[in-house]
Length: 347
Image (tube, rainbow, N blue to C red; front, side, top):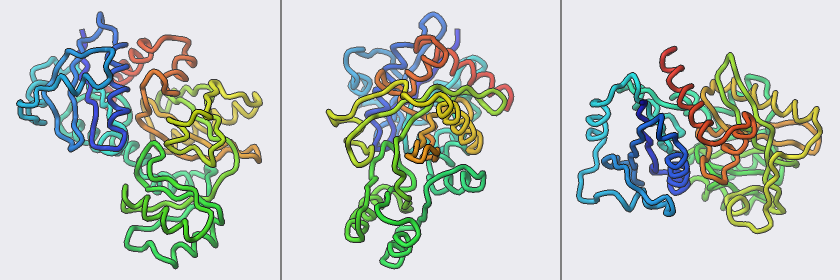
């Protein structure tokens, strides 16, 4: 029997989503194939002792079950893992955003020689930092919005004027490294620009400004690595909001899901080919969710790649992957675990 350590939580703004993802994974892992051990990472980045019991009806029971009197320690985690049969032990880092998708955990696991599931340090770091990924997409000649960026100390009137001249209005302002549309604003004028920039800089010291693409944002699940990449049909949130921000995606009653997204078959294939090319350009492996814009001009523009998308029951990624292979979620987890072990042998 293989052992799967599920690391969950983390210090990012997506902490609670990570717990929901972890709970869905725990509930669906095949108990006849795997021994599952859960390690909670709090909002300060501290590891808790491993525990097993939880209430499937309570998504926050993972946190409630922790013995708060016990010293939280990465050393305790490493000590426990070291007692395992490491050839048959793998880590599933269910940590969205900062710490989990920026390469931090991946680098740590690489350094201590532990196998893990999903993208490695480099592809995680590239995709987390949108300026870096935009530069790579540009060099790979993959279509995207016009963009400019600056560091916090350079955010001034001259920078805003240069963005308006190059990108045009309205435009999108976002932190270079953050997730779930947190800190993202649509800007209609220079006055709003300053406010939006200061808001984005609360989450990262690097600010990204992008051209507003008119059209529909679509998402695709991509699984595999360079020699064997599978891409799902696209899905989309249909909304009357000016753009798909955090509130529109998770709280708006007017937002509806379309899975699969209805589009011309030729354009659908082009979208899948484009998503595959973006995934390869960023060096992704294992799995990711590729978000692209389907412009009113019927062209495709890369928006971003999420190297550890949501795994909650309502998350698009899990459902797109299940539709792609026509299997249940437990079988998707089997595939990701098998791929993780296979890649670790090839490294």
